[in-house]
Amino acid sequence: MDGWSVTTLGQICSGVRIFKGPRLKSENLIVENEGPGIEPYYTPSAVLQEKSDSAKLLNVSLASAKQISTINAVRVYRGDIVITRSGTIGRVAYITQRLDGAIVSDDLIRVRIPDEKIRMYAYQFLMSEMARNQMLKNEYGAVQQHLEPNHVSNILIPVPSEWSEVDLLVEKVKLQIAMKEELEQSTSSLDVMTKDFLLRLIEEANNKNA
Image (cartoon, rainbow, N blue to C red):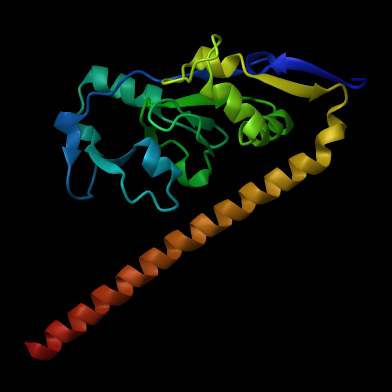
């Protein structure tokens, strides 16, 4: 159609990276309580949850040099798009400030697009049924059991000759992400406030009964 063409996600602009991180063997690092050197380790479910209650805790200070290298390789950053690659495949999330620099399972494929406008457009497209249908089937038409970076890279996506054509869509996506970040910050602040409030009540009760 005039003004539009079709390309693959991996070729939508220069500098695109679509990859999965190395597998992190973390059994010796898992701990129960927060503290110095302790970082959350996010599974796909934890990334997709609003509050990430199912995240594991890792004592990074106990990690070997090889584990540190793997941990740094699987960190995600604000602006990354992540896609579940096993289990319920094809679920998409946008990494907000809340998870900037977080340790995230290799069960999520990372999509890094340096151009913000193209990234917002691609993210919204990946959320669509048209993109999901491509992720659920392989080249032979069978149901996809596992998603790999090459499957994501080969997703067909319509692109405009003039990116101003999608300005309205992009601005709405940016607003949605900004609102999500504001909600996450508010939720985090409220959690801290609630915890402090309850601890104060317990302390007052203990002092009264002492």
